[in-house]
Length: 506
Image (cartoon, one colour):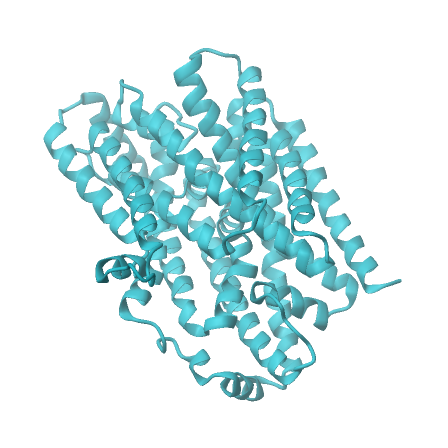
């Protein structure tokens, strides 16, 4: 039996397992709350690994190792920023959002929570939130499909487009039918696969490169600066990398997991599991890239054509073909876990936050769930169209969408949870300013280094757009809220009830 046959068998087993989980979740999905939020019944392990897997995506096994393989440890600042941001997100946002979303009319989406929390009778806040979610998640889902195409192209010699279609078809199938439970359960399994793969590859790889000392020597022979945390990076570049952590507070596909945890007491358990998983996985991804540099330096006959495929290449070199196939499945798991989460949130924005508000206010749960499934398909088709001609790296696409959500929603989530005087008009103004700043900053920054670029445009191009977007959103939301605040007994009562429940649990 050929190596390729073993790998295909492993991959088919994985894909069938994901579809089976989707079928199982479909049998348990009865109403809209089940489809969009799993009936708020996630345990701590599922919630933690589901949040982690949907967060990290193909970036963890492809984007980050590829960046470190090319530029060295200077790229690790993104991982440092993400770890700090993820911890603060679990510590500050998770417990309070779990309680507050239930207190505010059992809100099941982020836009509905903001509307209910701030008593926005105009419905504009929810509509604009839904539109922003759709815009940036279309780019985010597109990045996942690019990763899927690259995966099959690098691993099996398929065309990029064929690989993209295979990934999209399976993800859409289990997300469309199984909803939130399917996404969460598959994310849990996928998170475990990613974790084990990121332990196994560097653990075996370090023996293949001769041990720690020999590996470090090989890396230095390629370029000593690859082992430096600061060489070749400006202070602005490091700050921009750390600023990725700001994005966590505003990622709908991640923070919606907090709303779905079964009890407030289980949030702390989920935080410990989630952060432990994240730190070990990031260290594994970093080690994989460094070992890849050493291995290909020591074996010049072994060629790596795409740096973002370094994990895939090492898995195929170091392991038996069947195990290598499971390693490949772990990469596919990372890609699919994020796509499925983003498709579901996009679907909820289309149906729960746009259709029910703009088109038809009252519809049965069955109709809404079916429309949600149609929304999954629609967003997937648009994202596939954008990804069809690969014209950006995975990291570039993820960075843009991450900044968009972090700047548009991050300050709003924090202010809504912790500031009593926050208003709907402040939230609306801040959200629009944050999203527009990210889009404008990115457009201006694309001319960095061009002949016609000025010092100002070069500066803009070097600063990650989440920084100005987050700051301006926070500032505008705060100022407008100060001007438009009016005391509301119901809002105050909900804020106090949330605080009481949080304190009661300590």
